[in-house]
Each structure stands twice: as structure tokens, then as C-alpha cells.
Length: 274
Ligand code: NAP
Image (cartoon, rainbow, N blue to C red; front, side, top):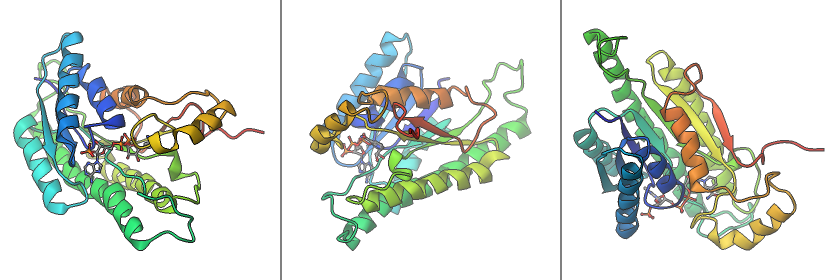
């Protein structure tokens, strides 16, 4: 039986890159999106193709749900449960930038509330519910003696990954609400990592740097100029595939004695220089 992953915001950009990377490792997938059904269909097809190329037969379904809305989150998790069974992996990737970049002295309450709802509240409550279910499943399998060495049943090592941003620690005064939301998500990671460690659920934060997606398209020229100056030191745009590879490292349990860890996938942006 394939392992199972739910990825939020998987129709486009980084989420689609993560989905394709997991597909190529043979994960069954639930791809969440909010409104772009055509993009979600494309993402599903891309995942099936990636799996086929890698020699895996996987199942993929897309589900529209707004992670900021409680009823949508419940429906998404219920649909994932019935389609996939117990989740091996939740990737909380869906996130939004401010519709208008405003100076911190002009940040609006509406934009602040929107970003906190999508970027923090949604991931928090999805992880809360998924974490409860993962912990219960770990307990159920342990009680049944499943997954012990040699019994032929795959070990169950569930993981939760939050996709934050270099904005978790970098002050951009023209999008304060985004930075605040990502800094909060870093704490969300720590909280669930501590709470779920003894339950056998690993929790990780992946901090992408500057990645070429629809989100960064409006500031492409500005970031191109930064890259020419050596910010980040690797002087290239990140790709959704770069982030997908980091998620695979967590999903494949290559960091078995780590939890709450931050993976900077940013071309070296986070390094201080003199
Ligand atoms: P993107 O290209 O704008 O794609 C956003 C994805 O999230 C889409 O699949 C979108 O679905 C979905 N989405 C948006 N709001 C949602 C909601 N309320 N509920 C469910 N899904 C929702 O963004 P991206 O650049 O790939 O960014 C993905 C994540 O990486 C975000 O958390 C972002 O903050 C973070 N990040 C991005 C960068 C970067 O440079 N791009 C850097 C650091 C961190 P629809 O297609 O239906 O709209």
C-alpha cells in the first residue's frame, strides 16, 4: 500500500512542486486548492505523469477547500481520510501574500486578518486535527503490534511539514503582515513538534527563499536585481522542485532523530556575511 500525503495549496507553484516530488516517490496524494480548478487538474495530471515515469502507480484526487474556513478544513480532512486512509504526511503549504504591499505604517486590518487566517490559523488547526489522528493511528498500530521489524507491515512514521518563508526572520517593512504570519508559523512548528514528539509524529518547518512562482511574479524584476548583487549567495531563483526535494527528505524519514527542525531552502540567503 502506498504512503499517503495531503498537500495544501498544491494546484500551483511550490505546492505543485512538492506534490510532483512526492508522486515520484510513490505517495498517494490529496491535492488541496481554493479556487483554481483548472490548475488543480493540471497538477493532478503532472503528479500521475511523474509517478508513471518513476515506475509507481499512485492515486491522486484534488479537493477545493479554503484553509482559513473551519468547515472547509473539516471537509478536506474527511475527504483525505476517506480517499487515502490514515495520513503519513501533511504538508501545510497554502499561503498568501498581501494583495497590496503597503508600508508597515499603512498596513490595513483587513489584510492583516486575511494573512493570519490563511497563513497561520489554517495551518494551525489542520495540524491540530491531523496530529491528533496521526497520534491515534501510531497508538492503534502499536497496540496491535503492527509495523514491528519483520512483520511485513510498513512502519508508520507520520510527519507534518509547514512551509514558512525567509520572512519568518527577515523584516520587509512593505509586507509586515506576511512576515508576522510566517514568524508565527515558526512557533506553530515548535509547539506541535514538542507536543507530538513522544507520540511518534515528526514536525518540520521548511523555509523557502526566493522561489519563482505566481506569488513572486509581480516582483520578478526587483528580485532579479537582488540576485545579480549576490542575494542570495547562490545567485539563482529557487524552484518548486528545490522545495519538493526537501519535503521528500522529511517524508522519507531521512532525519529520524530530528523534530522541530528548520530546513532553509534558500540558496544561502540566511547566512550572515561580513
Ligand atoms: P502561489 O504560486 O501563489 O500558489 C498558492 C497556492 O495556494 C495555490 O495552490 C492556491 O490555490 C493555494 N491557496 C491560496 N489560498 C488558499 C486558501 N485560502 N486555501 C487553500 N489553498 C489556498 O504561491 P507559492 O509561491 O507557491 O507559495 C506557496 C507557499 O510558499 C506559501 O505559503 C508562501 O508563503 C510560501 N513561500 C513562497 C515563496 C516564494 O518565493 N514563492 C517564498 C517563501 C515562502 P489556487 O490555485 O486555487 O489559487
